[in-house]
Structure formats: C-alpha cells, structure tokens
Image (cartoon, rainbow, N blue to C red; front, side, top):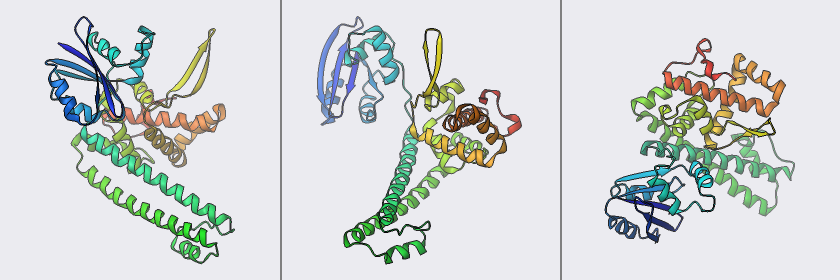
Length: 343
C-alpha cells in the first residue's frame, strides 16, 4: 500500500509517496492542467491512500482521485498545522508530512459538504455578495449627491429617482451617476432572480432539510434568509457532538489567554464561516427588538460587558438554541428553552 500526501496549489500539486515504513518512494510536482496527467500518475501507483488539505479549491482534485484511491482523506488545515508544529517543529506542513501522518492515522478529518449543500452555499453566498454590492453602489451615489447638498432619504424610491434625474451636477458626475444607477438596478434584478432560485431550491429539499427549515422558522425573528444561511453553512447538526462544537465552528467562541495563573477573555475566534456569524448577529439584533425575553438577556450582558460583546453573546446563545432544536426536532418555546443555551 502506498500513502500519498498532496500539497495543492493554484497551478500545481506537490506529491509525496511513502510506504508503510514512511520511507519516501517518490516526489513529484504536477501541473493542475491538463488534469489527465495527474490521473495517469495516480493510476500508475496501484493501490494507494491519499490525503489533501481542505483548501478552497480541493473539490476538482477530490472528484478526479476518488475513483482511483483505495481511501481518500480530507485534512482539516488548522488542526493539522497544530499537530505538525508540535510533533515536527523543523518540518514545513508539506506533502511529506501529510503522507507520514496518513500512515500514522493522525490526519484530523475535515467535513466535506454534500453536492446539494455546496450548491446551496453558492446561492446563499451569491446573495450575500449582491447585497453587499447594492449597499456599496448606494453609498457611492449618496456620496456624490452630498457634494451638491442633494442627498435625500427616499433617494431610491420612484420619487427619489425622478428627483435624481433633475439634480444639476457636472457632466462627469452625471455620467458616473447614470452608471451607478444602472449598476444598482442590475444588481436588484439579479437579487430578485436569485431569491426565486433559492425558493425553488428550498422546495426540492430532502425531508431532513425540510424538517430543519420548519424548526428554525419557529424561532422569533428568524426568516428565510437566516434559515438559508444556517442550513447551508452548518449542514446536518448530527456532525457536531455538542453545542460548544457548533459555536466553535461558527467562530463565536470567546478566546482566552492564560498567564501566571490569571486568565483574560479575548474577542471571539472568528474561525469558520463569516456568513454564519453575520446571519446570527443580524438575527440577534432583530430578536432583541421583538422579544422581551431576549432583550432582557441582551441588556443584562450590555450592562456588564458593553454593546458589542452583548450582541455577540446573544448571537452565540441563539446558535445554541438553534442547535438544540435541530437536534430534538422540537419547535421553539421559551418555557422549553434548553439549559445548554444559557449564557
């Protein structure tokens, strides 16, 4: 049996093949294109196991090697780096280290989303992108008009757009304003189309996903946008062993530094999905405006820790409630709020 470590880059892959005794048999650098050369190299290895890190662009390589490998492992980059640095401090985290850890069965695995989850994430993240672009374009329009003291609150209503056409501006600024309006209208149209696509995508959801969506919809102030983000980014809740694991995955776990017997709280780790953190924080703001219970939670923390830490704490607690409900399949109820969701 050969064991193969693969260090994936944008244009090349570095390959190291070792045997059961961790003796290096082959080192090779292959171009990512044409992919057939990569297939030929691995097909010639005979029986092999391979490991590749879960980088942003690993999927094409996984699909290429999956039919050829006896076993294919997706490595968690951050966890692997910690292990490698603690056991092989003089070595870089490269293909050889990957191969050797594969022999020793020390590869910390990463979660690989299903094809449906990857498609869902792509649609949800495109919506995030379009909304960000719309805000950016609107801000630029307002910035130009503010130079002429012509900005107004209802600028993007039919009345405001009619007003915009009549504002006396320089020829250069009029050209830019026209382009920005066209860009804004184009993005709004794309957002409408994307919203329809997401609705159609949700209708085709398998039963477990439909049940997850229904459970999340029972939480106050949690709407379709938040549900899409949580479902697409988290995946099946069963893959997390505890609420703490879910919080850590979202990057909402508070860091802590210990020195000389004293500990100091740091900010959140911000590991994991920024889209998930955004959705939870936005959901937390809506929740405290609509729920006296959650507002009391926020205000209690606000007095002790300040506004920013208070809303993050509410977002963290909201996520633990979501995780508990997804695991149990029960609808949201204040009286039944799980003890694990406290704090």
